[in-house]
Image (tube, rainbow, N blue to C red; front, side, top):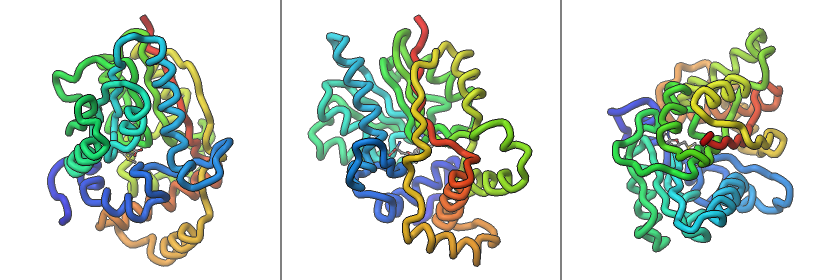
Length: 285
Ligand SMILES: C[S@@+](CC[C@H](N)C(=O)[O-])C[C@H]1O[C@@H](n2cnc3c(N)ncnc32)[C@H](O)[C@@H]1O
């Protein structure tokens, strides 16, 4: 059944989550790309590469504390990353998703993993977080920040959510540099990516850092994962051929929109107009 209410991102994920999980790059329950980083040999490992980067940092912070960290996943999908972290580190976790269907799927996944006593998923907008969310020592957003309708609203919420000394991680796509703005070809493909993937916040890294700083976050670490993305699979060529033949059609169906945006994202990465960055900040205080 196609969703009709809510924001475009909500409709997009309410409609497509089942398909994203079935037709996506892996079977681990994550809704993000495979990253063939150092030490990765299998697709299963590539699918959880970013989750592992997040989990290691959460575990490091937890090891310095006596009480369980509250970890918040901003744009939690079906809760796979949060379950992964909680399975090995005694955190308390909250996943926030704009998609009610994802929240229902995440709740089932958390219960099946036996983690319901300390992990939960809630429906909400990370640009206007649900009231009563306890402060977090560690918050992260994997391939979710680009959907924020306003990057400032996202950081305002993070500034209220994350405790002084706490950590914020964003792993997402960013504009490579200022020269991209003056390339008509780059703008054409980036605009397709924006429309196809319901993108609201596509920034240059320097813009991102300026907003983070305004909200009390100091940059701690950046890993450029761009070169480790998986491109050029046979299905990518098939989708490319489909887009060359029919990509001019108006986007109506949200699955078509997903393919259209995904193809444009690959083109933009291959031509160096976008970067895929893992960025970590620490909240001052
Ligand atoms: C590409 S998926 C990534 C999901 C998950 N982080 C993962 O890696 O498996 C993007 C996620 O962002 C969520 N999202 C998009 N806009 C949102 C918003 N305004 N508030 C909360 N979640 C949002 C979607 O519901 C979805 O869960």
